Length: 134
Image (cartoon, rainbow, N blue to C red; front, side, top):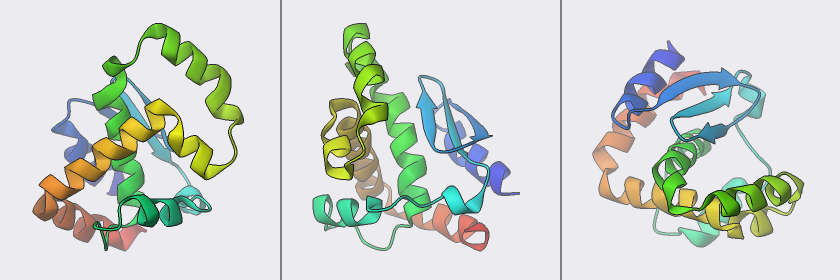
């Protein structure tokens, strides 16, 4: 049921949704964790609250899904060279604040924040549907 809700939400963006080990994105598909314990990441919501204090009452799961969608929406803003550099550095960046400052990560999170601001009713509806599964 949860996957159906997420797929329907993501259909608007023309992307596929799959379960995986964690949250991840490619140009036309996103992954979300197979296991509930992987829905949260240490420090993520603290970072969100610091950088986007105007956005309240949105779950970490929704932020994470939107962040991954943000990658699909901003993917083309970066060159192949930038993505190669990303692949060599991002997986080894463990500090959440440093990770956030990686251009591709910041772009995806900024995209998510803009989407939340522009579509509060759609986000509230998604949150209500997904809440029983979080």
